[in-house]
Image (tube, rainbow, N blue to C red; front, side):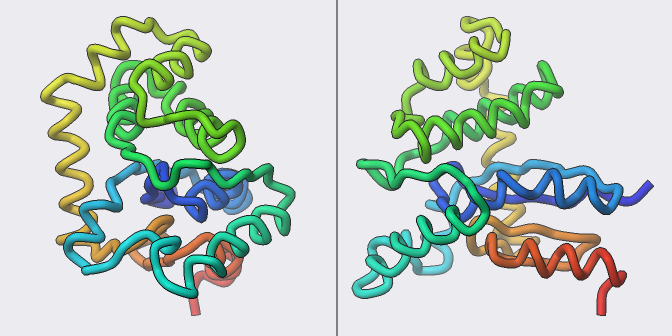
Length: 201
């Protein structure tokens, strides 16, 4: 069976959000699945000496415009949050906890968190907001809140983030590996489609 696409992303990434709306369908078209791997861009910024796109002079204004335009291109609902970016440790941990506790709920949770932030403008840095999202998916609230604070899940997020930076060379969100081939950005999904169709080039 063909290996899954490895999809690295941060929940505060607008381009990650856009890619997240398309990547499963793209993978399925080619008989693939997707391994969703949330990580922390803040750690990337420290290593790479970068910052959120919106913080750069000139580029920031353009980026905000492009987020909206890119979403419209694909018919994806998008509203720039009033507070941006937000800490995403809880959302990442929630996804990894669900991968263990209720694997079929992990991706729906991740999608719902993205929508809560980039459509509804909710504070996804709040554990209670995340618990509301999990509860709506049928997850026990107390178990979820305990899970995202567990040492094991905290360590898992650190491990994935460190491995992505130090060993995989991930420097942004979204960042997708297709059989080891790296693709950075939501605008590379069409290239991934062609890559899979042709078997590379």
